[in-house]
Amino acid sequence: MLLQRLNEYADRLTGVLPPEYYRPKQIHWVLDIAPDGTTATLQDVRVTAKNRDQAHIQPVPYVQRSGTRVPPYLLVDTAEFVLGLPKADKDQPATDTAREEATRRHAAYRDLALQWADSGKGSEAARALRSYFAHGGPSLLQVPDEVQAKDTVAVMVGTRWLHQEASAQQTWADTVRVRKGGSDDRKGLCLVCGQEGALLATIPEPVKKGAIPTTGGSNEGQLVSINKSAQGRGGVKQLANTPICHRCGGRAMAVLNHLLASATHSRRFRDHGALVWWTREEADDDALSLLFDDAPDPDDVAHLIDTLHTQPTPHAAQRVQDNDFHALTLGLNNARIVVRDWIDIPLTELQATVAAWYEDHGVYDGWKNTTRYVPLWLMALCCGRWDGQRYAKDSAPHGLEADLITSALRHTPPPARALPLLLQRIHADQHIDTPRIALLRLILNRSSNPEDHVMPTLDRDSHDPAYLCGRLFAVLEDVQTTALPNLNTTLRDKYLRTAATAPNATLTNLRMGANAHFKRLRRDNRPAAVRLERRLGEIVGLFTDDFPRHLTPVQQGRFVIGYEHERAERWAAIRRAQEAKQAAKDEQAEPAS
Image 1 (spheres, rainbow, N blue to C red):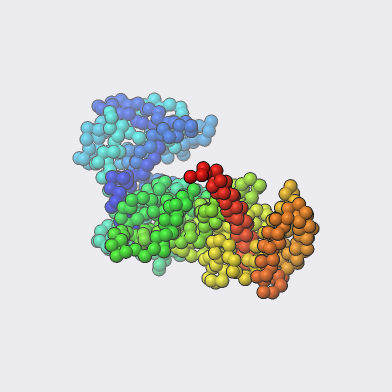
Image 2 (image 1 turned 90 degrees about the horizontal axis):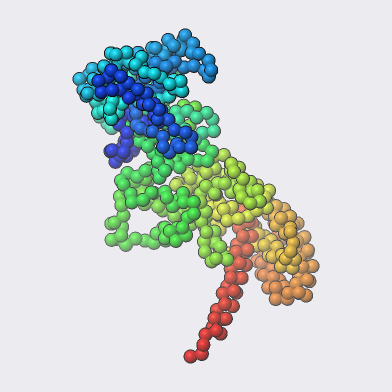
């Protein structure tokens, strides 16, 4: 199914994908051969690190090769193959073994290049190449000392790149089919396209090195790789039990590399792994742009959520695009790609899951009277350490961002480890902000127990003890800061952890300690004292029993939500009072009619 979807997408990329078994690569030197082939020069097209954007990058022949006697690429290869330049350590002469291997590799390169030139498909450029080798090849050149054996060298005649010749592309494709088809030249039914044809022995093109971030050593990766008898069915290695034709195998890997290199169809995780996605039919915009937006637009999110709850009219339903969304989460283990998740759903279902994601975590801002939405990467990072100004770089738990993406795309709960990790950081940092509240709301709203679900704003009718304890703690903190506005350390800084884990003892002591604050407020700010006493009495009156002695992790989460809801309601009340005061002033300022 996965390879089929990749091949279907390849049909939409005609003219975008490189030729078969070609891959974009930086060229360092150009072997410029004269039209008659009797002379040649070596041109330096390297760039400095500061000018990487000016690097000379082209699709060139490529296929995975390994071992000690590796075969050549057609026309574009390293200087060891193209020029016969042996490998040598820094400031050390090349060994006899290195010279022998460079000679062998150049001979193989020359034979493959002449195979194309002599095939009858060659142009005037091919005749120039034959003449170049007939006149001595690299012996015609003055190779600069700065040329290294690993540098990539491309061949040009006049203004024509030889590897761009249509005949060269065909010759290279035929060469790869021979190399990767196996010694028995198997034919059979391809599992991907369902057509009879020549089958691959191994997948010819790997995922480009570095395309999938990994915490280990970076390497090229194969999507299908069976090189040990223990891995294959019946002890059979390679693709004997996984019949894939040349066309499907090459196109699938070309599309996968294209997606991984796309800024609008891939997401690289901060620790390791990557996500790629595409749609079956061409869509108007990026399917996941809103999910990965660093600053989600509240209006766009509100519109998306509204569509989640609005039943479309029959006319509107007929206009819904019949499209599918595909997403692939990948990791890398040594030289093998790990498929961590595969999603194949209608595009309309994706839109509903993204809408539900935002609805489940939106945080009400009482001061601005709006709902704030948090970028997905920040929800993962908020489980990291808060250094007083921002979340410390690379402190987020390993793999949490990928887990949250799975939760978003599959409309499933976040991983079980998210709640204890988040509570641990809240207690350690005494820091509660919008990203942490958003993640906490998401965890609770996607719990399998409906009693864990929380409202987006203050729930005045809730009798949940944990939620009420959080509200009560917020009011007690308000009492303290109102009575002593210049304090450097608040109740939250000193007692948040104990109040959220063992509220009975902590809240009882804090209530008794609040009496001194109320005494001060009655003397200096009686309206505030009346307001806070009434608020405190309302919350205490909602308890049906004593304060709980201990709270479970889920109850601690509800404690924090209650605390935040009470604070948001306080700011909303201040805002409403200021608006009413300003409205009264404006009314008085209006001239009499």
